[in-house]
Image 1 (cartoon, rainbow, N blue to C red):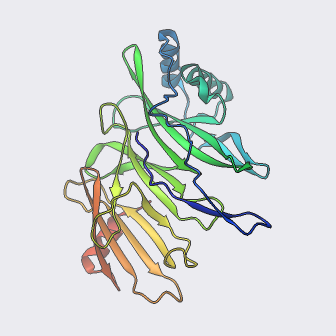
Image 2 (image 1 turned 90 degrees about the vertical axis):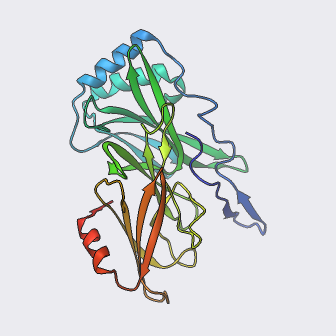
Image 3 (image 1 turned 180 degrees about the vertical axis):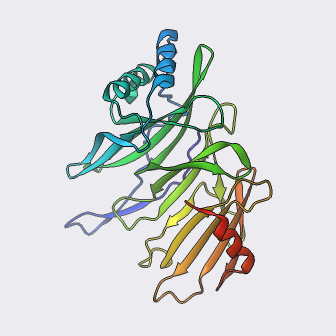
Length: 306
């Protein structure tokens, strides 16, 4: 999947230094479209992995299966819904045989992405991208692959990189009633007051790759990005508002996603109520201020919190 996110620049201050350093944590990050991780197509390994996935026992709640060391005082937990240690290890070892570069910082989930067939194998991997100017720090980027077995082979559709990302939810969304969308939670920076985003990824939208829904918040209804504003830091970085996001059941005409921006004390502007309708993976909005209309309130009550 082509890079989902617009490059964001971090402004970091060095202790005792007067100069401001502008750092781009995405610069030099591995491009998995040009350097694929899944390079082994050994028939026996593929068959063993497919058998192991089909026979895996799934837990209702994910369990911790490891951790990723980012800094000396910061670990990211790795989770999976395959909690039997032997089954988890067997599947992960087979994944690594197909993608040797994913030996570390990797886990997986088995998720029902459609109404028929076996659960989909979604592989999660963190690249800890070091900043050359400050090698003690690192930035954790989540990469995802959805493995689909086809006869004696497989495809590995990729989405990434998501800064400090994690799978937030998997659910039906948009106009598609048969396959589910993976919502990935991530941030725009680490050493700052971050904005938290969601990106909605359809791993089966295209024949060869994943595709993300694009949203616009621009007054001119342009500038679409593959991000949903999910939590705002305020404090001068954004508006001071509490955001709530809900999705509606799939439909052709929409709307598909609703948001409320309830202004906090000191923010001199009315509350906002947004209704997004998605067509061909582009989601445009209608927005009302003040109190929600009766029509919006009816939709809001039907919608499910994301």
